Length: 73
Image (cartoon, rainbow, N blue to C red):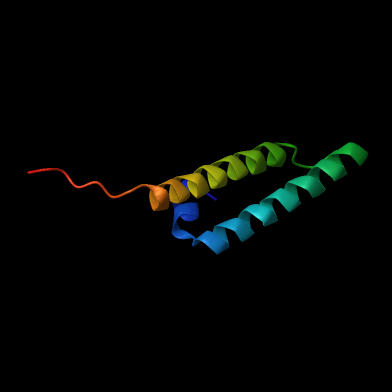
């Protein structure tokens, strides 16, 4: 998923998607420790997806918590 797709998700959906990606990364790392993976680059892509998802999650929390400041005329 790219950043645009993460931004389209709601807060709960984003959290669920991050849990799924983390779980998939865990399983891939477990398989990598036992044998060779057919696509080792997948681990790197999953790590990046997690980073992008967490960044989007923090941005949305920051935007919700930030007070709305209107410019003075």
